[in-house]
Amino acid sequence: MSLIVQKFGGTSVADSQKILAAARKAIRAQLEGNQVVLVVSAMGKNTDLLVSLASEITDRPSAREMDMLLSTGEQVSVALMAMAIQSLGHQAISLTGAQIGIKTDSTHTKARIKSISTERMQRLLDEGNIVIAAGFQGIDEDFNITTLGRGGSDTTAVALAAVLGATACEIYTDVDGVYTTDPRVLPEARRVERISYDEMLELASLGAGVMHNRAIEFAKKFHVPIRVRSSLSDSLGSEIGGNVESCTQPVCGAALLKDEARISLLGVPDVPGTSLEFFSRIAARNVSVDMIVQNVGEAGKADISFTIPSNELRVTLEAVAEAAEVAGVDEVTHDERSSKISVVGLGMSRQTGVADRMFRALADADVNIQMITTSEIKISVLVERDSAQKALSVVHQVFELDKQPVSAVSQDQPVDDVGPTNAADVVDRLRGVDMEELTIDDIQLDPTQARITISGVPDSPGMAARVFEEVAAAGIFVDMIVQSYTGRPDGARLSFTVPRQELDESVTVVNRLAASFNCGGVSSSPSIAKLSVSGVGLRSHTGVAIRMFQAFAKAKINVEMINTSEVRVNVVVDGKQGEQALANLQAAFADVMR
Ligand code: ADP
Ligand code: ASP
Ligand code: MG
Image (tube, rainbow, N blue to C red):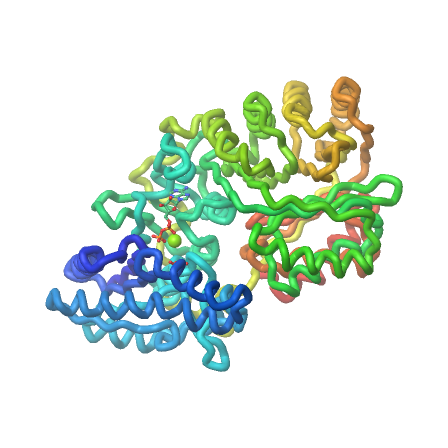
């Protein structure tokens, strides 16, 4: 018998009428011949309410007690949902995370799922029950209640779908699918029929709050097909699955992360091991660093900029101050009022002229770009928070995201590599591994590129647009782009990589522009090595960058550039050290290679 997991978010169970409506959807799915597992969130804004209650008591509540508190929201919903289904004449039973046997690690408020037992759920389903699981919670080895992080009910739903071998995982929410950007922020956003795992993974972690990013990691790892649907209608919603391009446009979506804080370390000694000093202390406080932009040094000193969620600024600055004592940096600057705008699309990995279109749109709207980081399928820029909404709007427009694209795949055709894998296979794969463990698929060395760096880029709109327009006009394919920011008037440092045979031409273009913009200077290196580590969980596991930095520090390899995405971390080192760096990375990640 097929099995369906349906998840209802907070707004979809906000009152008794909505709970009854959700109950009817579940009953309908059962009457259609499926076994049904429901995952529910806390009612309405209940979790927010609990958070603010805690803050009335203390501004530093213990994480364990926060979990004890927050998990009660879901417990209310599951009980009411079971009563609703029973009142409609059907069998139902509610279970907390602990009762199901969702085992997690002990990282309170951001716990990761280690394993899930299926026996009890399966027995209850076989007895004819609709099983109602509390979202977002689990239990650690010592029976402490844990939660998975805000929005984590999506992750519970997809994880249950994976272990139970569900044929579908339906996420019911207050929008009727995945949009090109948050429709509440930009009304012209358009619903997409389909989106690939990697695109959704990037978008979710870059600010598209419609799905918890760890839910997509699960879905990708265990091939769970997801449908995001409205709890208010019967429309089909959007499908998330596969890794095929769903449209012919280079960009499929844009996202805004409003509450970012930037920290810049200026005049960092350009020697191996310095980054490790900082990032290991930050990771020890469980802060996930978002954009890391490290730029090649000058006169033995480098700059490193990175962003973190604004609400983690204080604890991060503490870690930074500690590390700065040891590493001896010249200055630390920070800015609490930044926002990040990103565009995502599988199509951009093969096209030139995507970055320059984005930068041009921003320049024409008079938006200053503070930091830039790219990966194969995304470009992110950091801007001042006051200009974030305008920035999102012009970027959405320049990539014509409001217009229906020509579909690259027929809508009737099932998406490649989506579909339930055999349940036994999945359970087999899960035996003995932590479900949310980091997995690395591949580590590669690309010795064919060269680097160009422009220093002292003026802190005003337009420079990046001109550089990448002219480079694109010369037909040169730019791969990595990083721009770090100092917070000082002498502005930013911009580095990018191009194929080695196109270095001379690129330098000519850049020299001309740097002179007309009054930049500090241009340097380049014909001999760099780019190392890429790809897999699942790269960014949500704070330890990945640390492992890389450790591996390099041990071998005395200096990192010249770095950029990170959900599925890949790229670093550039001196070309002579490429082979050595590859060997060190392979050793550092040997235990998580799949
Ligand atoms: P739930 O409580 O059902 O989990 P969420 O509030 O977590 O609901 O997620 C739904 C919201 O996500 C929508 O109301 C919408 O404002 C927001 N959102 C952000 N980005 C997107 C996007 N790209 N597509 C659709 N919705 C988005
Ligand atoms: N109730 C939790 C939250 O508000 C989990 C969820 O809704 O996904 O974050
Ligand atoms: Mg949600």
